[in-house]
Picture 1 (cartoon, one colour):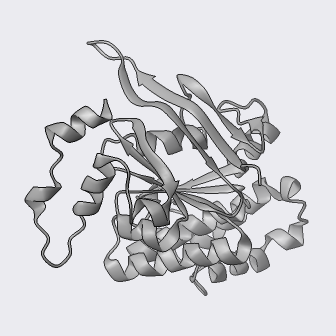
Picture 2 (cartoon, helix red, strand yellow):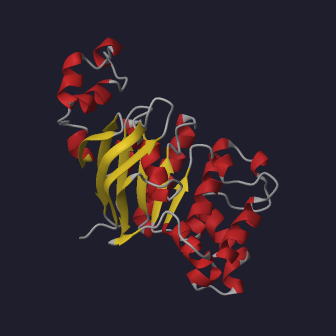
Picture 3 (tube, helix red, strand yellow):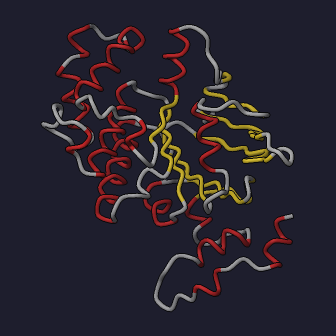
Length: 277
């Protein structure tokens, strides 16, 4: 099966007083339709930069992003092109306030999105009103909360509302940038179960940014391990979590607390660094 999303040689450099700073360099991976891929690594590994580039929030310095073999334009011209680009890839951030208007009810925000995308989705006015809003809120486990504003919701509920907004435009790919990192363990489990259901029942394709290998094990089929802006290992999650090939991946696995865990053994050594060069 051909890839739905293909990222090739993706690079982002930022100008600085002491020269260019590279946030990510030569990042390549593929995601098939209906799969869930994890971008894994510590803070500063370049994961969030990659998803921002894929989402079109930033322009790459080099490389390309293909959806079904066609380039995704990061700067589309015209209203129709901008709406199509927004619908192709949706992103859910760690902080859901970035996409929720505090002055607007959750239902009103969803209805506004549906009106904007009505022509592209091929829906008439009746199909983009209360019925569709109710369906979306039911899907993410927020029944009866259409009239609630973000301040009334818990952190987990706000994250569910952000996911509902992303799903409203029926995107090809859903990007999740540390979308459960700020939630407590029980709420994390609820959101992860929701995402797993969306993938299994609706065929939603997921790219999940995380530093938490437990999340990777529960949700994803394949993983891309990043360090210092570069990819150091890729492969099926089942293999990476049981037989990692790169020293840095082994460091990440050793960092997961468990009985007999010794934090001192999780620190990268000089030999690890030399292996990566």
